[in-house]
Amino acid sequence: MSVAAFKPEFMRIGVLTAALQELTPREVRDADPDRAVEEWLQFAAELGADEIQLSSALHPSVADIPAEAMLDPVANTLDLREPFDAARAERVLASVRETGVEIADVAYFDNMLHDDPAIRQKKTDFMLRVFDTAALLGVKAVCGFVGKNVKRTVDGNLTDFEDVFIPLLKEAKARGLEYRVEQCPMPGWTCDDSFHNNIAYAPGPWIALHRICEKHGVGDQFRIHYDPSHAVLMGQDTRSIFQYLKDEGYPFLISGFHVKGQVTDSKGISAWGTGGQTMERGDQVDGATTPNAADQANAWLKQVATCEHELPGTARHDPLAYLQNRTVDWLDHQLAARELLELDVSSAALVVEHEYPPARIQDKEKLRPILEGSVAFTRKIDEAAACMYALQNEVMPAQGIPVQGIGREAYRS
Image (tube, rainbow, N blue to C red; front, side, top):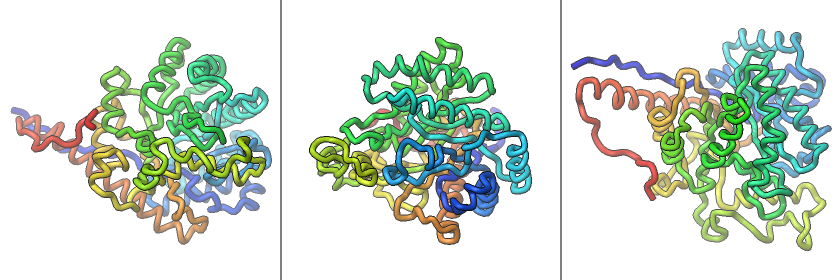
C-alpha cells in the first residue's frame, strides 16, 4: 500500500475590470488610455487578486449600441481606438511587473455574427485589434462571445459561424491564441422575444461548433470560458454540464471560469416562467422596437425578471435552491471542475465578474471592501475544494480508505 502526499492545487483568482468602470474617470482615461490599465492592476493587487481579465469594448463614441440601452456600463478599460503597439505594451507590462498582478486574458464581449455586414466588419476589425494586443502582452487567450445573426435560424447561423468566425479563429491561431467563448445567451440583445442570441450558449452547441472548428484546423483555438450564472438562467447545473462534456469526449473544452452566480426569483418564475418577461416590458411601442434607447434596455427583463446576478460571497442561499439548480453551489462547482474536466488547475483562472446591481458602486473606496471580500471568498472556496479533492481522490484512495457519503450527482432532477 502506497502513501500519497497531500498536495492540493489551487486556481489563480482574478477579477474582470468591468467591475469598476470609473476607477479611472473617463475624461482621464480618454486622454491617457493606458492609465486605466495601470490603475486597475494596482487596484487588483490591493484586492488580493492574482490577475485581471482586461476588459475592452468599442468606445461609446463609435459603438453601434447606445450606452443607455445596455444593462452594464461600457467596459473599455483597455482603450483600442488607436492600435496597441510595442510602446503601449511595455508600459502595461511594467505595471504588471511592479504590481505582481498578471493579465489572464483580454476580453471583448460583442456580437461577432451581427446581421448588418458593415457593423459585423467593424466588430471583426476591433476583435483583431484585441488579438494583436493579447499577442503583444504575451497572454495566451482572448475571451468573448460568438453571437448570432438574428435574421437567420440557429442552424443558419452554423453557416455564418463557418463563414465569419472560422477566419477569426485562424487569425487567433496565427498569433498563438485561444478564443474562449463565454456562454451567456444574451436575451436582452434584441427587443423581440428571442432568448438565445449567442449561439454558443450550452454544451450541445459548443460541441457542434467545435466540430466545425476541427474541420478547419482551428479546434485548439475554440475553448469555453464557463460562467455558471448562465447555466442557472437556463435551468442547468454545473456538475451535469461537466459530466455531459466528459461523457461526450469534450472535457477539454472549458479552459477558464467566470465566478458569478445567479439567484433565481421564485416569484418571478411564478409570473413568467423560465423564459422571463415576454410582454409589456417597455421596449416596444405598438409591436415595434421603441426608438428610445433607454427603453430598449427593458429587453433585459427576459432575464432579470426571474434572476439576479450574484457577486460570490454576498448572497444567502436556501439549501433547497442548490437542489433545484436555482443558484450556484460554489464548493461543488470547484470540486466538479477538478473531478470531471481536463484542466491545468494551477494555471486556470477563476475570474470574479461583478454584476450584482445594488452593489455596482462606481466609487473605488465604497466598492473596495465588497470586491476584496468576494475575491477572498472565491479564494477560500477554491482552496477548500482543492483540499477536499486531494484528500478524496489522491490521499485516501492510495491507502484504500473509502470516501464517506455520496455528494451531488449529475443528471439528478
